[in-house]
Image 1 (cartoon, rainbow, N blue to C red):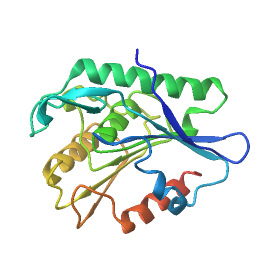
Image 2 (image 1 turned 90 degrees about the vertical axis):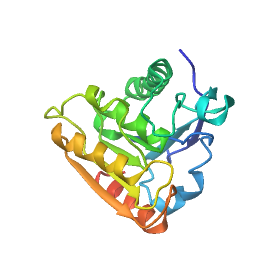
Image 3 (image 1 turned 135 degrees about the vertical axis):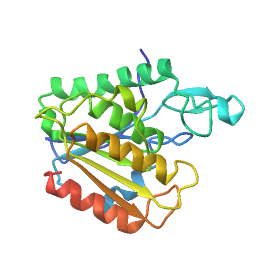
Image 4 (image 1 turned 45 degrees about the vertical axis):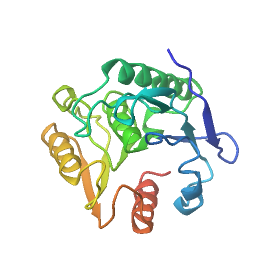
Length: 213
C-alpha cells in the first residue's frame, strides 16, 4: 500500500473534527490551502491534504504526475481499478488513524475536487463519516456504488455548468445515481468551468458550518 505524504492545516489544540481533502489530477495537497481562511472553520477542525502518488497518466501521453488513478480516455469511462483500490486503501489508512486517535466517524468528512472528488465519493460511500463534499467530479463505476444505509452520510455535489473537463452531464448523472441509491444528496451548479468560484466557497463554508466543522 502507498503511504501518502500529507499537508496538514492544524486545529487549535487537539483536533475534534477532520476533513480529508483530496486534490485533482496533476495538482497536490497545496492546491486548496489558499481557500482555508475563507471557510471559517471551527478552531477544533483540522484539514488533511494528502498528496496522491506520481503515476503515468495515459491521456497525458503517459507523463508522470500526481494522480489517484490512471485515466485512459477523455470520456472518463475507463477506470484504473488497481490505482483506485490502492489509493482508496491509502486514504483509508488516514481515516483509520484518525479513528484510532479518538475522532468519531461522524466528525470526519471526505472532500475532493475532480479526481479527488471521485475518490471522496468512493471512500465516503464505503465508510461511516459525517459527510462527503464532491466538487466538479463523478462516480467511479456507478454500478458498484453501494446503496445508502440509515447511517449514510449527507453528500454535497457542486459542478460548473461550463466544465469542459468533467462535463456537467457526467456530474449530474452521478448525482442522479446517488439519489436513486437512497443518499441524502444536494446538487448545486455554478456558471463556471473546471474550477471553484467564490460563491461556491461560500456555500462550502455554510455546508461545513451546518455540520459543526
